[in-house]
Amino acid sequence: MIKSELHEFLTSTFDLVVDPVERGNGRTYFLKRVDWRPGSTTRVLRVESSDETVRHIRLCVSSDNNNSVFAIHPLRLSSLVKVVGDEIGRLHEREGASG
Image (cartoon, rainbow, N blue to C red):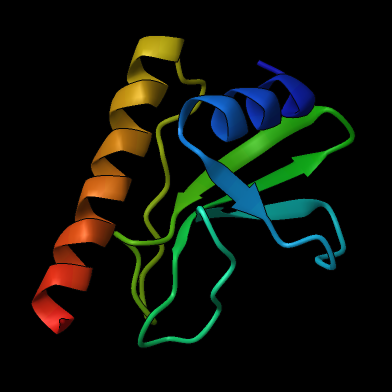
């Protein structure tokens, strides 16, 4: 899956959005709204790419300040659905624990 196909899939299937002012070869995907603040962030994924080639997908909820967790690449569509769904589930759990 190339970068533009992945973007279309993530935004249409999971209601993920990107920060329109973000620059560079990567995109950070947020659940429904962009919130960068550490205590309430809605970050789900960070997709790094060069041109249309996806290099890796970092799982933002599963990662912490010291360790990054990456999705195994390349992902089949069925695996991608599970990985993204699991990250969104972790985000909801974290929001429930802090609220």
